[in-house]
Length: 202
Image (cartoon, rainbow, N blue to C red):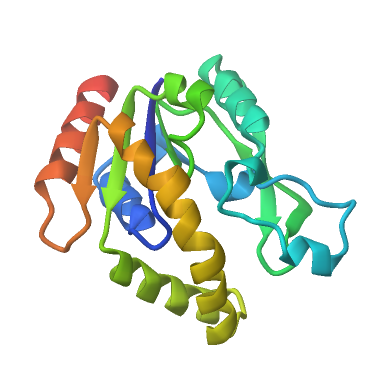
């Protein structure tokens, strides 16, 4: 199994890069795991308390479970990925049955920040985007998909997102094998990644 880690700041375009990579590959041979599914369970906290959690700090992620799940997939076992709700800031009772694939893509802002997880990646990718661009994308997404208002998103960006990005996310670029500048014309890096994958699955 080839495991690819795709990191980058919030709104950097990781999901787009994942889509560009998997679009050309057989559906049955590629699986995707999102770090967003692995936020810790917060049943012991009230809704208000959950709203105050710093979701951009490595502490918010259940890396132990993610590492465990990847190890199981590597052994050929099926896993049940948790499902996280950004509306309630908590895990739901649902899970996603995930089968092992020849290629597993793991994407998320902090996935290169965890040494154990990093060790499991055969290819480490960092998607780089300008900070203004990332803020605009984050604003659009959080307002449209997560029911936030502009003031709340901007406040979170200034107090949490920006400092966490500088402290924990940007430095992980140093671990990347490939850095993808996220613009519309960047097909070369995507082609390189596809070539590596095709070599492994054919």
